[in-house]
Length: 87
Image 1 (cartoon, rainbow, N blue to C red):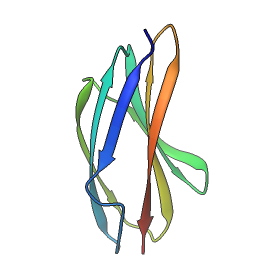
Image 2: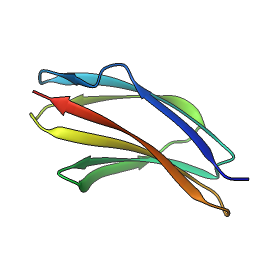
Image 3: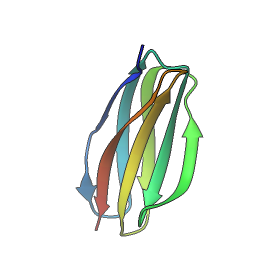
Image 4: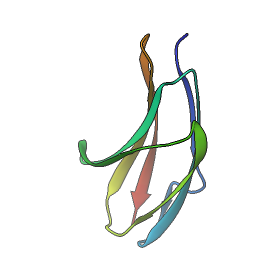
């Protein structure tokens, strides 16, 4: 089976410091992780211990970021992303 991912953010733009609550869920995944990119370069990443949950991240710098949820198993790797704009 191919992994399935769902990702949402409670806010996608605002003034720094911007606190964002990401809610995620994955199915059929052996590994679920996240990447945070700025200017198309990944500068932070992590793994989740659960197939669903939340993560709060506080963005300090005025930039445009991409938060990427990645789920994988032996059959495939899938991802969803949310763009966050900090003014």
